[in-house]
Image 1 (tube, rainbow, N blue to C red):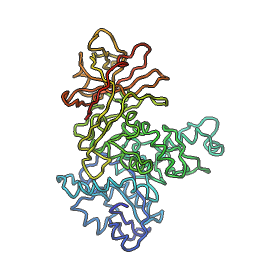
Image 2: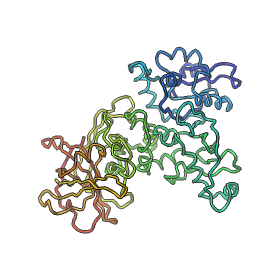
Image 3: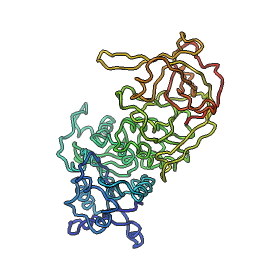
Image 4: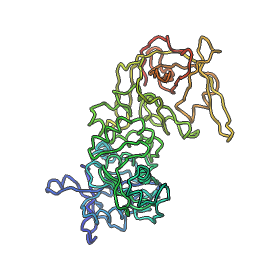
Length: 489
């Protein structure tokens, strides 16, 4: 249960809304049915930011009353919707969690409040009656009730009415795509907000969509259609919460691929903005979540790489602040990919131990430090980088990987450097690295592993700088490499 809620007061609006403490409400025996709002913060000016947040200084005023006209349009609409639904309370993140004032430095009270509430984000959305999504607005002034343009004619073999009558799979997926379209689909926090909510009202430029764990429906449609929580995932979600949590756990790599291209106002929220979903999965599976990876599948989860196709130079790069160990995708800014999905893997490596220390109360959010010990075949290699101009004039950085003891012999390893901002310019030329072999897929004749640079050779401590794969016929350069115990930080 969130610490604070907005009491929207009677439906006729005769009394101003106000912020209330849930501990006081529960002590009075009140039934705490509430809605939530999922919205884009955007880049508000100072006046708008003051109107959309609660600071330690403005908290007493918010508890006394909140004038509807003083709030941004999206917040006003959310209060109106909540009143019309005859639900008494509403939760909006920026009003119900203490925020830093634009004109003041962050204080301990604000940081503590955020840390504690972010830890409970999964239950805040799971326990809400309905989540209101302002899907068409890229800032708080845009509102929920926007001018609609109607559905584009994407359905083949009939009109929308016949599509609903025949319940075609194509139509179902199209509706799911529309439900996750618009500015909110580019916001990282909104992925878990949608996944965790039991019921959703999407206010989109195509109209209002209803979504729950068993159906999705357009506002003017006759019949509802089974829901795909995400068209790109392709899971069919059933009413039981465990089913979709299990699906997210099974296809965690797809979740991360959809999540990491999305934007964050604060880069430090890279792990925090998906920690609510991770907590729900951890409660269901009893697996251990380690800085964005699952312990039972860690050798697979380590094999992410920068999505070169979808990020230009300057986007895929290491975080400026420490968020996670180098082996976690949380340490990278920009979209990442996983490859080599499938079954029948063999693992020449094994995890020996792990340790992570969170930076705050939310143990699934940002980390202060962390390491893993792995025993794996290891080899010292030489990587040669050079620039390549495409027909479109784009600059790519390609590489060859050679063996130290046979520099003229290519290894057929394909290397992907993690840092696409500083990496290419600094890596141009020949550089010595170490690679560890983590996984083999015999059916595809494929090998996968990590590229490392030493932090201390004396203590066998390394940091991750990239990922490699090999899927050619012929000799694999690491086939007879010695197994070495290494610590990666």
